[in-house]
Amino acid sequence: MEFAEVWGGRYPAIVRLWEDAWAEFVPFLTFDAEIWRVICSTNAIESVNARIRRAVKARGHFPNEQATLKCVHIAVMSLDPTGKGRKRWVTRWKPR
Image (cartoon, rainbow, N blue to C red; front, top):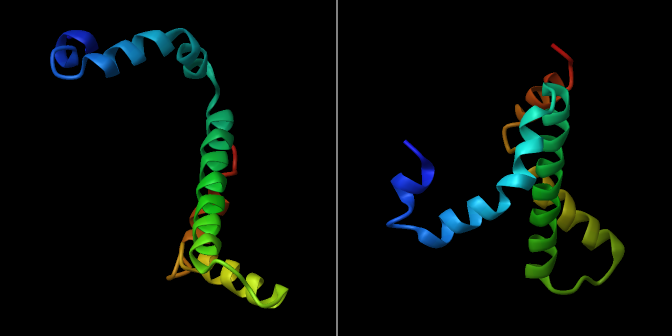
């Protein structure tokens, strides 16, 4: 079934958005697996940066640079409290 047939009645704005962006999206489908890894890791980096910005913004102000670095360190460490994520990310960069 077509995307528009299934979801068009319930979400017409989303279907219109998808159809308008289709020409820009299709070239991404032809990328190699290594390029997809870079794209996905870039999204992960942006996600980490967003978490750091959120933590710093919630704190508001800092008395010195060391306090700022401590806040950033805590925000980054809270993303992977068990420490197992590092091993998983390292293996993603090896070509198959």
